[in-house]
Image 1 (cartoon, rainbow, N blue to C red):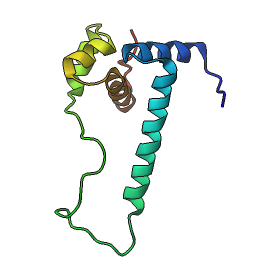
Image 2: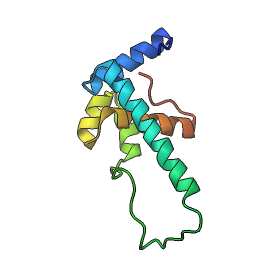
Image 3: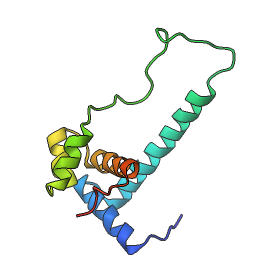
Image 4: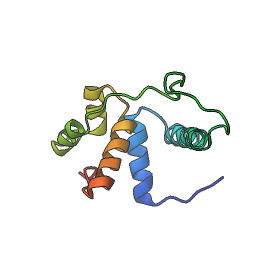
Amino acid sequence: MHIELSAAFKQELILLATECEMTPQKFCTEVVENAIAERRLRSILETGKPGVVISPEESATIGRRKSAFDISAAIELRQQGKTFQEIANVMGVCPATVYNRLRRAAAETSKNHLTD
């Protein structure tokens, strides 16, 4: 499959892939695979199995363990001019996590912390 991307989007993609020490193709593959897995999990959690009631004590945690992520610290570091890689190293997460969390926070607050 071939998808046309804008030049700006391609540059951002290459930058993120480089910061994650991946090829752009590998980075895209991981992003798409994670999105599909998340969608499948959300579907399972929303639909569930009819007629089966499970108490919270009996339920199992599904998915990856959530990392402790201090969004205010990440925003502050980004405003200081730190790269996604530098922030990721400090916080012990992947640069893609930093980028995604900052993008989500920017969308929620209508501020753009992603621009240089």
